[in-house]
Image (tube, rainbow, N blue to C red; front, side):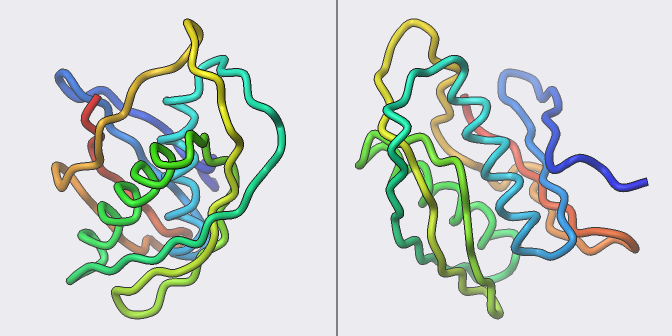
Length: 139
C-alpha cells in the first residue's frame, strides 16, 4: 500500500512531519508541503505564483533535510511567501532547485507558526516501496 504524500504526528510541544515519495526528491518536496500546509491554515494569498531558486547542502542526508526545510522557512519569511510547489535535484549532499510561492496576507486565520526544522527524530531512508523523510518542527 502506497502512503499519501505526507503526514503529521504528535511530539510533546512540537509537531512531527513525514514525507513520502517515489524518489528522494519527491519525499523532500512532500515534507516541505507538510510544513507549509501546517503554516497556511486558511491564509488568503494573492494567487500569483513566483519562483525562488533554492540551494543548500548538508554533511549527510539528514542534515540536508533540515537545511532544506530551514532554507525554505528563511526564504518564505524574506519574501512573505507560502510555498506550494517544489522542483529539486539532490546530488550527494547538495540540493538545488526551485520553490514556487504565493504572497500571503497575515491574518487571524493563519495556521501554526513553524519556527524551524530540527534534527530531533530526523530520518531519511529508502524503504522497499518509497522514500521516507521525517523530522520535528519547532512551533
